[in-house]
Image (cartoon, rainbow, N blue to C red):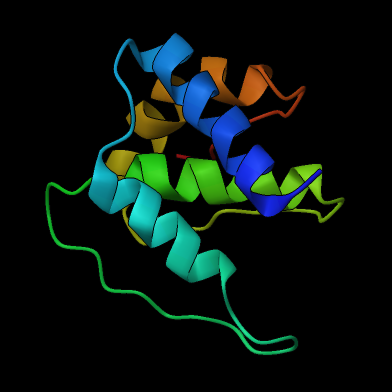
Length: 102
């Protein structure tokens, strides 16, 4: 399955679970984060209101589909609980679990 097919699958999962498609900036962010040299990572600064939660969820699902173990860590316990609950159905589409320690 190609990278583009994976993106199409997670894009559709976002549409199903949130009732709206990911925004262009979210899709571009996912593409940029996935398009890194082997063995090198990426660091991104996403502005407030651009949908970091959705971007991270899409990246996590793609990496999990590739067989990677994915853990998401946040510095904001105030956001961890509601956002993990918000994304639960999205992750369920991929047989992934989500929880928080907040």
